[in-house]
Length: 328
Image 1 (cartoon, one colour):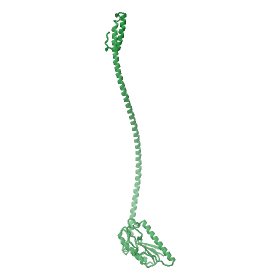
Image 2 (spheres, rainbow, N blue to C red; image 1 turned 180 degrees about the vertical axis):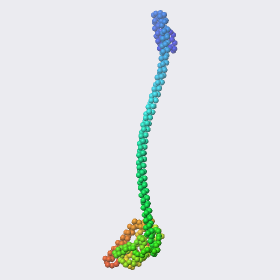
Image 3 (cartoon, rainbow, N blue to C red; image 1 turned 180 degrees about the horizontal axis):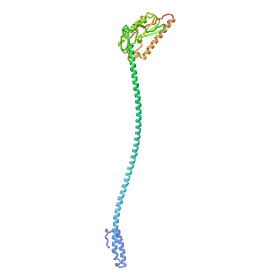
Image 4 (cartoon, one colour; image 1 turned 60 degrees about the vertical axis):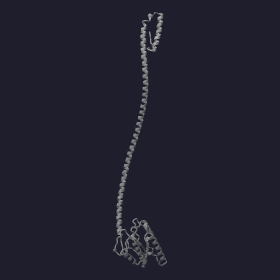
């Protein structure tokens, strides 16, 4: 049996060597014819064994390669599983975040709806308030128009001039040449103090004459015409009128106790309303305060004169105290 090393499997060669040794022993003990029939069978068996071992080696090699590939595939599968797991977890987290954001948005939408409803109710309330205010403004405007109309009517009714063509200080100047009646509207009795102010509807010269012709012992305070701050061009006429009144009072020799008071001495621009014609509330208070002080002084003088049974002459204002208005 001739075996070439490198062509047969090593295990087959080792087995063939062992079988050859055993056959040599048998041949030495017996004859060579005893093993002649056995040798071909042994060679075929060894060839088949060699083929099987080679196939086995090839299978083992393939198995190793497959195992290696399987290991790589398992590793890739594990990596892929991990990636899928991470992606799935990330997806779950994203879904949870999305659900949380959706819930927050729903809450915000509900809040916005409530806010919208509240704003609508507030707007309705404010619209109602605005409607009421508009109605109030309309009523106030109507009242204001009525008051302005009444004031204009009163101004027109109070525009009077005397027979001596003295112009009454009013915004609209209307001169009346003739008066309807020649009588005095001041009621006078004994021990009564009367105030005659030319800021009231103007006393005509005939009425002044009728007043001076009375022969009664009564204290009368004649006030000057206040200056006009709405139309300063009339102040020269007013100054002449006040001079006339002061002269008449100073030259009076009858039984009346006349006093002349120039109210322009203490009245300024701030004591008139904005349009400059009528007294303001402050001006009225100042005027009443000065008149009250003058009356109290006169009453004290009269009381002292009565107690002493002697007549006391009350100082009068003359033309020296007249002055033009202050530009205030």
